[in-house]
Amino acid sequence: MKFNNNKPRKPYSSKPNPPVNFKGTTVEVFRGDVNGAIRKLKKILEKADRQKELSKREYYEKPSVKRKRKKDQGTKRQKKLINDMILKGEYMPTPTVGQEHLKGKREKRKAWMEKEKLRRFQKRRGK
Image (cartoon, rainbow, N blue to C red; front, side, top):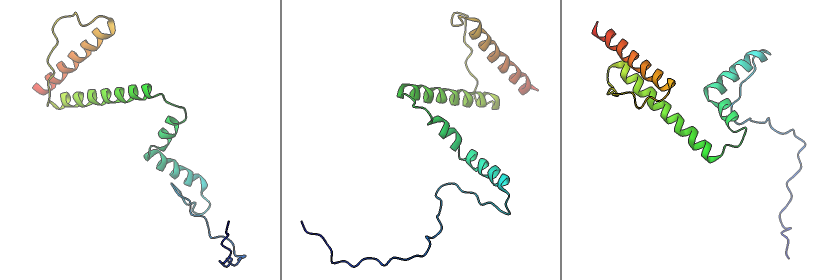
């Protein structure tokens, strides 16, 4: 085995290390106002959804639960989109006929609320 001992050593310097540059989100403290800096940092983190991301990664999420969460988010987004379109008058849903699809009180209540919302919107639009 051969070692490379031909290279000269780097000279030792007793100079202090340069200041550390922090990576990521940083906030400077001006005039000793730590509370203001903390408030500013919290706002920055809130805008970047860092807190939500950290709380989401705090515990392991099974792939099936992850898929279900994503699916529920998509369903909620689609319902909101349709609801906004109804309120703008861009889309009118076809009314469902009969009561067979309404098995419980909750479904009946939801259907009644939808009809009531449409009725109010049409009334407002007619004026």
